[in-house]
Amino acid sequence: MVLSPVIGKLLHKRVVLASASPRRREILSHAGLRFEVVPSRFKEKLDKASFPTPYAYAIETAKQKALEVARRMHQKDLRAPDVVIGADTIVTIGGLILEKPVDKQDAYRMLSRLNGKEHSVFTGVAIVHCCTTDAQLDLEVSEFHEETTVKFSELSEELLWEYIDSGEPMDKAGGYGIQALGGMLVEHVRGDFLNVVGFPLNHFCKKLVELYYPPRREDLQRVKHDSIPAVDTFENLSDVEGSGSDPAQGDDGGGHGRAEAGGDKRQGPAGMQGTDSTGTGESPPPFPAGLLELIDGFKASKALFVACKLNVFDVLKDGAPLKAMDIAGKIDASVCGTERLLDVCVALGLLEKTDRGYRNTELADVHLASDGEYSLHGLAMRSNDHFWNLFTDLELAVREGASAAFGRKAEEPVQSKHKKLQFMRAMHGLAMLTAHQVATAFDLSRFTSACDLGGCTGALARALTQEYPRLKVTVFDLPEVIEHVTCFQPEGRRPDWMSFTPGDFFKDDLPEADLYILSRILHEWPDDKVCELLSRVSSRCKPGGGILVAEKVLEDKPAARGSLPSSLNLLVRTQGRERSLPEYRGLLERHGFRDVRLAHAGDRLDVMLGTRASPP
Image (tube, rainbow, N blue to C red; front, side):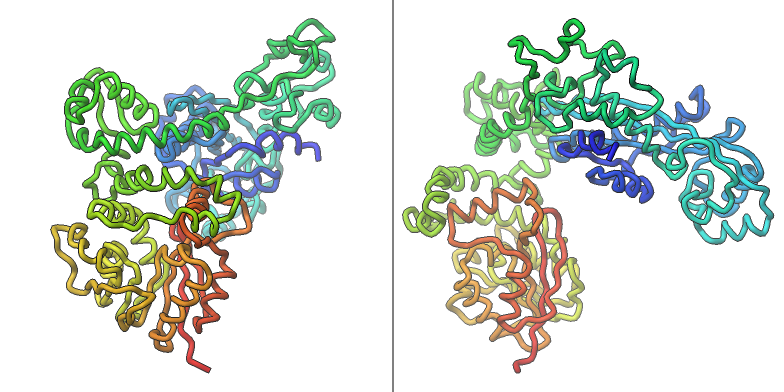
């Protein structure tokens, strides 16, 4: 396929479409592009009169949409996608810009103005290449526009209103959709039809050629610049990332090299293009920035852990900026070491640095100060004091298997109050992030009582009582856990419909309930222990009752990067494992639970609900 090499340049990049338009999504999907959809929140309120041409307005709107998404994703994930695509389509007639109608009367005014006349459809497109260096976001914008001329037939009032009443005009620029019923209004089209639909695919591919396939000198006379290069042009270039023969690669590894009409700046005399200093004729591979970042990743984690342990984010919470010397005094550390740690936290997006000193980012205030409602400070401390040491045995676990590694170095029992509270803070922080999503994943209003097995601090139980005021929830956990739960209740109080019962769910009688909850429990245990626990739950659960299981369910597709460490956690510290939906469904059905349904509760957790069947 002619376009495959062009689109292929983006296949190994994280591409985001900054538009909720189903038409743009469909056009790009059919072209073979893999991408995520993150609708832009940019408010389209630019002053149209301030732009010299209608297409300049469309281009600027598209650019602002893409930039908003790139910056938001970078702020959220501390890393932006590789490419963000923004687009804006407008209809113009007589210099007047027609966007989406606000109501039926507005749609009628637009269509009446277009009736029997020619008008122009402009789509502005912005391709934003993102690069994150030392937590700083660098953006490079390429932009273009496409114009298509459309002629409406002479249409009767009756036909116009019939079309308006169909509802189709209400989310379309100019008040019509040419790809659907609106196509009946059109007499002819001059130019790119897909541009009228919402995205100029042909021009987009030409732009990719310009960005990723700079013309070679010997091709300048042969390649026509008003069309996509012929197949043989691509065949003479490698479309495989990292193959070493792409003249656009080698400068920054991101495919952002720019060669003007004169060719690649690194080219030598005619006949010597593409040779490197060794004379081998091969260009160096793309710079492996992502790999280097991965290799150094443990240093960033350790810096975060140390900053948490020294209470840096507590010192800076809700206060004025402080100088490194002042912070060093408060955390009892050297000025030199403190300043270097603070600068690393700035690079990681955890702190901000101004002339007045250092201060927390919003992310740090919410999640890294130890007393926040959604604090992950406890999780960071548990990762530093517990998991960091366990992961030194990862090689042993890989070589000998989880069972062997677990047998040779079992986890130390939690003994001191400090360790108990650290564990509970870690679990509480995770539970608070997902409690609402788990509580609302299914309609649980038919249940009047629930028992959260291993419910720790009651974060999920509290969310359930808030969502279902008539639901009575019992948290069942070990006595040494229940002993400290008051530390995690707002102002030390608990809801009337929420109670805590000490016990071991493998040994003691389970409290009676309509619904039993196992949130982040089953993955900690091997199949025999899971079956033992489910058998105990099944024997207590009456027909018509339910079981709610919250776990990360394995999928056939490659795991997201964020879910990978949990799999390794299980390898180095327990004999448990993650399971697929068929495995969980099989376990639940084996113990009398039917109609097992799945719902997603965010990127890192899934929820399954099963109903206890009547005994045969």
